[in-house]
Amino acid sequence: MKKILIVILLFVVSFFVFAKEKPQFGAVILPDHTVFTVELATTPEQWARGLMFRHSLPPETGMLFIYKQPGPYTFWMKNCFIHLDIIWLSADKKIVYFVENVPPCDQPDCPSYGSMNLAKYVVEVNPGVVKKHKLKLGDKFEIRIFDK
Image (cartoon, rainbow, N blue to C red; front, side, top):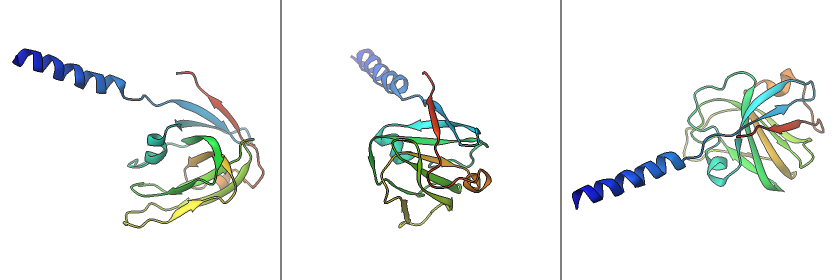
């Protein structure tokens, strides 16, 4: 009986270990043709976690949040350890809003940042990207999704 329980336990543990989602990646290409490699956030769990608990973000990388429907999505920096530029993109991938150098938050009540304009995509990158690449409302990005 003990051996059967051990086998069942090993099966359950291995199922959860191997069933864990592997990150999916893509590219965001800015209007000046700079390419950012981005980790994709496409599920509610990935949207909620975002870049939490990360202590750094390599240059020209970030996270791309892809939503099923355009909406007024808001973000907060709870448990995020790095500053970020956050850029909201419409369904046609044009900038509808951005916030620069958003600070981390270690308080219980963190402020929210969001666009009143509808967005289908949101990009989080290192602070200074908006300024360095002279991004402005209406600029169009290109998005490419890499195969698994």
